[in-house]
Image (cartoon, rainbow, N blue to C red; front, side, top):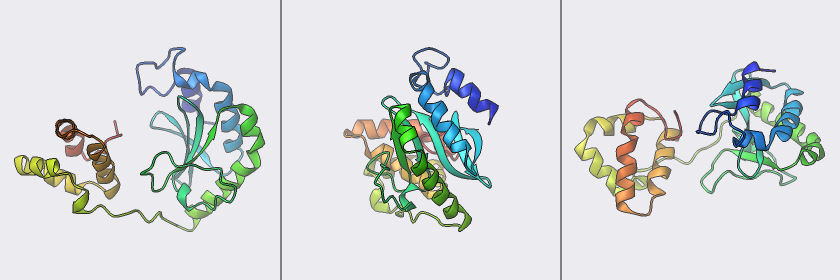
Length: 207
């Protein structure tokens, strides 16, 4: 057990203003998080504290992450799309998720009901790491770049250089963020606000 995760269960993840308050989402799911944590700890995974939440690794590689969301508790597998989900228990976090897949729970009894399945999926996820299997991500192409981004490249070549130096995953995250806006003005505003992080080599969801 990791003491930092104990603190997470007591105070929250610290990623919003509700940290340390009764309204924090973590406190809505305390019993479920504790039950889910106990199941995962009884596997070969090592508990770490990353991004403010409980992350579970195998030989230093990220395998799964436990988090509390507004409507459910989730155990998300970083390479979940490669798991043989015969029971159809996993779901994608969003329509553009290429790798992650998650278990969703709303009660402790659900976790208890699927405890055997959780262990089985964890075991399979560990085997993926042992065998060095990677998710075949869709490559980012120039067609994914909004015209507003090209305009910004012309205005700021340093930004363009930094953006093109980002890892494919970080580029993909930014492009999804930019292209998710419906109005041109919003796209431009998102690009402008991204500058500091991009110049520091960070993705849109990194602090």
